[in-house]
Image (cartoon, rainbow, N blue to C red; front, top):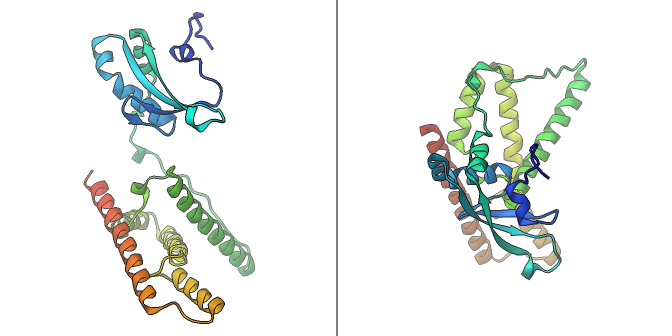
Length: 241
């Protein structure tokens, strides 16, 4: 791939096969194009200010079968004009997001039966989205700081309440569905963990030993407590900023 003037892009010199994944730019780990762009901007900030060229170390994984040879490193050479082009690829919204009304969709049922069916469908959708968020949290595509605790929920609830009673009721319903999912996770301190203990008792014909129940409960309390502290800290820092 070349520019309009026929010159090659700097990445073309790396000769990467299709399916290669950039994992690190300099000392910064990257997971998507937004991370890569931010890392390039940070790594070339001084060169951009001086109008100079730069050479950046890039780490990648290649689409090959041997895991031992899949990770490679290379030096990406950027000229001063390349760096100027990189820093010019940006756009700042001149308007505040407060200038835009959120997009809203009206859901209206024409009978009580249709309303119940619509409620079941929306509840199912929210529950599936909650499970999907948990999966992406484990995969790392959703950051822990995106989770909200009591402080964050109260802050968002206050904002939602200003938009109207219907929106507030829907928000409370979403919170209830989320709590239902969390309550049924296989953690010792919630109903999901209790269900597993009852299942164990049904299969083995005897309950889980008291010592094991106490240990599992302490582990569950520790996990919930640690998560509570992390999300509360993130919520407070978000409010301060």
